[in-house]
Image (cartoon, rainbow, N blue to C red; front, top):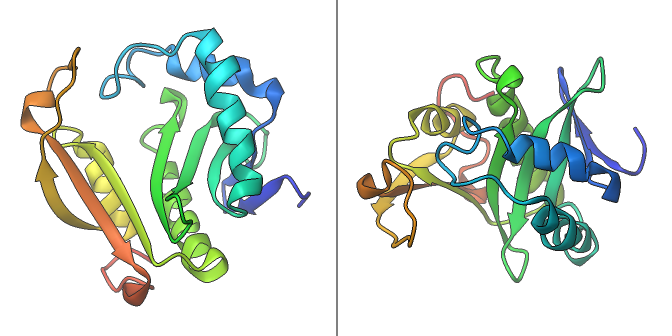
Length: 188
């Protein structure tokens, strides 16, 4: 593995983003099904001038945390991204992922999430990993539970331009370092 690769799983390679990834991110966010629970596509200028520079700065600010390009380990195809977005002090991280439709239904979201949980607790040493999704996003909720996070709460946010299902709220899941490794069936 090179210095840009965070980790590898059986089927995934997670590496640092580079400025050359603009097209990958724009394409990913341009798929209406990928963005179904997130909102409208992200404009190229926003990806290029705001999102990607912010991701690149994160690597030095909180080593081992941030957003990572997810590649097919065998063929190198860009599949999406996984994240351990750090809290301001770096003691907590928000787990997230966004995958192309071609990667859906193959267990890759769970595989990548489990690997990042292991990395967060065993390598970085965060005290808590948490995740949020829409209540109606049952597939992501299943991934979070399979990865070992537990449901914490449902809450409601105000959005100026809500996507369908927003009225049902958002859910939060978490896993504490003291609970690591999780003992739920299928998490190891």
